[in-house]
Length: 327
Image (cartoon, rainbow, N blue to C red; front, side, top):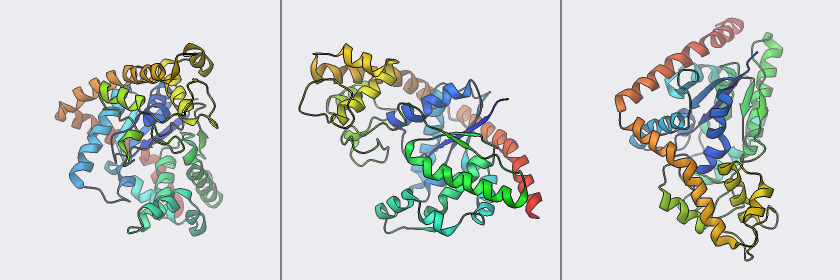
């Protein structure tokens, strides 16, 4: 029996190479074996102030990019979160099953509060509950996550178990799946931090829409170490190890094979090869996304169709929740 998989991505900026290697590329392979429901989670994005026109444009760009990765729109539910009101309704219900103390312990809340000290709003505090609603609404049994999302998924599990303990077997309790390699692609400028599409330093990331020259330039300028040996050692050589992970994922090679292939060649040749490998993966995605964005009516029809399919998928779980709590 196929399990349902749920995952989402925020449209706050164009996704990076890290988003592609850690999530979006895996979305395609997972969709071939499972019932997959993927969301552009725009409601999560507004915990930080967004320019309205930019947000509208980004939603469409990210939707197009996700499709361009190779998803079959007919066999996968891809939708914009705010187009499905059930998310907000279930979030409010689940707020009553989330404890204040456990929300206060969320690491990302603490980090984002420090980064946006002038706007520590209630949405920022409770958005892990909205994430929980996203997952539970579709009976997702599997959630692909990065290491930094483990705490949020544990909260989702706790809320589901807590609700089921009161009302019976209503929610599927989700299990995490963390990719063995690529779940945490690091910044090219500071390999101690994750590659982030909101990084104020553009040298730290590669956007999925960057052209070949930009990609190769950023790989060439990536921070490494004073040596010249291409060897996988995250503790002693984090920058080189990050580039090796990127190259291995883009070419399908094992890390050991990458080290052997560039033995004695130094960082210059290796960094150029990494840039070429990245472009070979992203170039067809850029081209297909551009084609989708050039036909706004057709893209709009795909977005509307995705919303209708998501509404239909969410309706049974939400109705069951309403019934058991007495609404």
